[in-house]
Length: 431
Image (tube, rainbow, N blue to C red):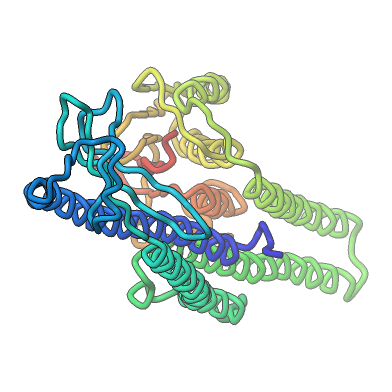
C-alpha cells in the first residue's frame, strides 16, 4: 500500500487517478459519439429507403390493382414493405426489438397522416451491435494499456521531480561545521529556488554561529588565562622571601580584585549561554511599539539614578512583528546601558523609533566620547573608551541580532559628540 506520508506516492496516486478519470470520461464520450454516428447513418438509410418505397411502390402496386392502404394487405408477399395503421401517430418514429438473439431496428414512415397509415421497414442490426461491442472492447483494452503507461510515466516523472531534493539532501549530508558551503541556486529548478535560499540562509546563520563560538572560546581562554598568570606571578614574587604582613595583604587584595573581574567575565559568559537558549525560543506575535514603551520606562529609571535623562520618540502607534522578545531586549539593554555609561552627568540619551518602507528602526543616541569606526566593535572581549567592562556586550548584541534576522550598527554622530547605535528589523518580520 502507498504510504500516506510519502509525497512521491501521493503524487503518483493522484496523477494516475486524475488521468484514469479523464480517460474514462473521454472514452465514454468517444464511444457514445461513435454509437450515435452509426445509428444516425442507420436511421438516415431507413428514412431514404422508406421515402423511396412511399414514392415508387405506390404506383407499382396500383398498376397491379392492389389497394396499398388495405389494412389486411400483406405487402411482404409482393416483396415490398408492410403498410400498417398506427393510431395517434403523425411523424416518423423508430422501434428497437429482439427476436431469436437478433436485434432489429424498425422505422414507421407516414404515407397518409390523416388515416394514420405508415410504411413499416425492419432492418437487422445485429452486425452493427456486434461492431459496437467490438469497439467498446477495444476502447476498454486501450484504456487499460493507457492507465499502465500513465502509471509507469508517473513513476518516472516522480523520480525526476525528486532528483533536486536528493541532490540537496546529499549536499546537506556532506556538510559539517568545518565544511559549510552555500548551494548554487543556478543549478536548481525554479520551483526549488525558495528552498535553496532558505537552506543558504540557514548555512549563513550556522557559519556566523560557528565563528561566534570560535571567537568566544579563543577570547575566553585568553581573558581567563592572562589574569590567572598575573595572579600566579604576584604570588610567586611575594613568596620568594619573607615580607611584612602589609605586602601579603596587598597581594591578596590585588588578587581578589582580579578574581572579581574574572567573576564578571564568567557571568557574561553565562549570559551568552542564556542568550543561546533564547535563540531556540518560539517566535511570538507582539506589538513592538508597546514592548518598547514598557522597556523605556525602566531605562528612564536607570538613567535618572546616575543623574542623566532619557528621551524617547516612538511612532507609529502600533507595529506588529513575529520575533523572540528575549533577544530584542538583549540588544536594547546593551545599547541603552552603553549610552548611559558613556554619557556625561547632566546630559541626555535620545531613543528614536520609527517605521521605514523596508522595516522598523530603533536608534539610541548618546552624548559620549564617540567611537573609532575603523575598529571591530563587535569582537568579543574588546574594550574601548575609558570605562570598565568585560567587552562582551556588543558581541552578545550582534549574536542576538543575527538570531532574529535583524541588523545592528554603530556610528558617530555628525557633530562627533556621541554615538548612534541602530537596530534595524526587516519588514519580513512584520506579521
